[in-house]
Structure formats: C-alpha cells, structure tokens
Length: 371
Ligand code: UGA
Image (spheres, rainbow, N blue to C red):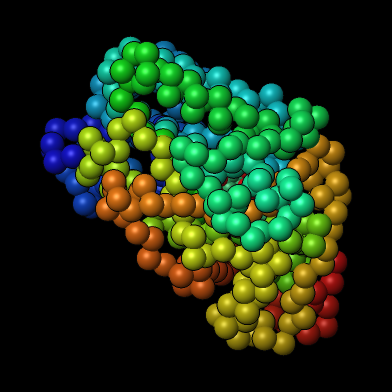
C-alpha cells in the first residue's frame, strides 16, 4: 500500500508482536499508526513519534474502539489471551477476548468497509492426523499443515486447553463468512510460535503466572533452576523469528489484492525442534553468551502436564507449516535460523533482566540447578 494518507489502527499495539510491527511501519512506510492497548511499556520510545498516536484503552470499551475504527483504513487485530496456562484455568476470559470482543470488531469492519488483518493462531490446527493416529510421521500429507486443506483436530470439551483454539477457529469462520456474504476485506495470519525480544514476561518481575515456553525456559536459565519439560518435552514446534514474521506483515500490506480473502501460515518450516531439543539449545546458547554460566549445572527435568498446567491440559503434537501460499502471494520467505533467533532473543533477556541475575554468579557453583 503506497498511499501515504493511510491510517492503520493496531489493537494490541503494545504487545510482543505489535511492538515489532510498530517501528517497521514507522520506519518503512509513511502511514499514520494509531495504537490501542492497556499497556505501553514495550513501545514507550515511539510514543512521541509524529505519525503515531497511542490511546490506553481496554477493548471492552466498544464505543471507543468503534470511533477509532471509523477513522482508520486498515485494522490490525492483535489483542489475545494467547498463553496456554490460561486456557484451562480462565476459559471464560479466553473465549471473551479471543472470540466475543473481536467478533464485534469484525462486524464493525464489515459495516464500515475496513480491511481487517486479523492475527489468528497455528493452534487452530490442533493435533495432526499422524498424531491422533498413533504418532508415525512417515507421510507429510498427514502432518504438514496447509491453510485451506488440513483438518482442524481438537480434543473434547472437557480438555479446556482447546477453549482458545475453538474461539480462534470460530472467529476465523466468522471472518470468512463476512467476506463471503458481505464482502468484508480480510486477511488472516496464523503465527507459528514467533519468538524474539520482548516476548511475554518473567514471572515475578514484569508479570505473574506462567508464560509461554521460551520465557519459562528463560526464567529458569536466569535463576539457574531446572528447565521443566512438560511430559518429557516430546512435542514439536516450529519457532519463527519475529522480524521474519514482520516481513510477512509488510508483505500483506504491500500486496493488498493478493492478500485479501486469504489466511496465511507464517512460520519457518526449517526451524522445527522438540521442546526438549529447544531446552538443550537454549542452555548451550546461554552458556555461550554468559561465560560465568559455563560452570553452572543447568539441566532439564520432566514434569507431568497435570502438575504443570492442571486438569484439562492437552497439546498439539507437531506444527509444521506449509508456507507456499505466503511465499507466492506475499513474496515472502523467512530468513533466520533458529539458533540465530535464539541468540538474539536470549541476549535481549540477559540484558533486559540483568537485575534479576545479579548475584547468581557468586552462588552458582554451590547451589545452581537446584529446585
Ligand atoms: C501457544 C499458543 O497457544 C498459540 O496460540 C500460539 O500461536 C503459540 O503459543 C505461539 O507462540 O505461536 P504453544 O506452542 O503450545 O501454543 O505454547 P508454549 O507455552 O510456547 O508451549 C510449547 C510447548 O512447550 C508445549 O508442548 C508445552 O507443554 C511445552 N512447555 C511449556 C514445556 O515443556 N515447558 C514449559 O516450561 C512451558
């Protein structure tokens, strides 16, 4: 989109992904950006930018959101409760934030003819055909995930882990239906485990509860505690560097006619590891970046899903994206190998959370690695 008078509204602008999209939009385009979030701590340095306006706003304030949608051309929807520890513990809030609130936004965009770019999730695929058939991955057609072909395989209602995937899936179906019946202009992005600086939080420092796996492992490394592998860490993920993901978002904006009416897997199929392998890589890189940690006994420990998440947890076995569509229509290709992405991310955590790690080097040889 070359029009310099475009206004892009970003709901959830202050979160991890928003905090990476915002600077790229300000640097690489002439668009005006309006950001909405409950918290601006990750984007403070941009608050005074002449083409950026921030409003501290809760998306439950529908009237205020509506006013912003009216004044914008493109609406990016990033607000989500996207942390698995919440799905089986506060499922009502998970369904509210991931379905009910954005449902109103979809309706507004349809009514006012705005282009909605919605961030969905790789989790809507749930489990793979290979996974539910016993875990033999000899046929990629049974586990590689294709946007418009793969089945979406979730567990029973009692496995509340799937409250999030169900909410996100129904929202995608609603968006698709508005496109079909009322010509809503839409694009859906399905993130495959984006990682990078500013992801999530460290419990007790800048947030509470259990973050996603990368921040859980970072907390363990920074505090020299064991990295917990849920059920042994056998499940696999594709981790995608957030700046590669932002390239895809720029590809969407730069190719509007190709991007409209499409859902895109945004992930790096080369970056697949089991969670146990991720833990080992992170320990190695942490030791490389913090020489004093080389003598620490950094290790993993297996914990049951029941112990870690409580009742109602379940999991995706594998998430390998087919990215042919994004490569062709958005002229996009992810660039960053997992090791490089982890190095940049871990270096950020070490620097940003330096105060948390103070004193660890002195005590490390005596009690590191202990629970
Ligand atoms: C989550 C969200 O549900 C998705 O919406 C989102 O797209 C995705 O993250 C993402 O970041 O893109 P998930 O990958 O299951 O899905 O979340 P993580 O918390 O990052 O867990 C990944 C795996 O690590 C799971 O198998 C989990 O059981 C395991 N895990 C997590 C550990 O073994 N140890 C931990 O300390 C934390």
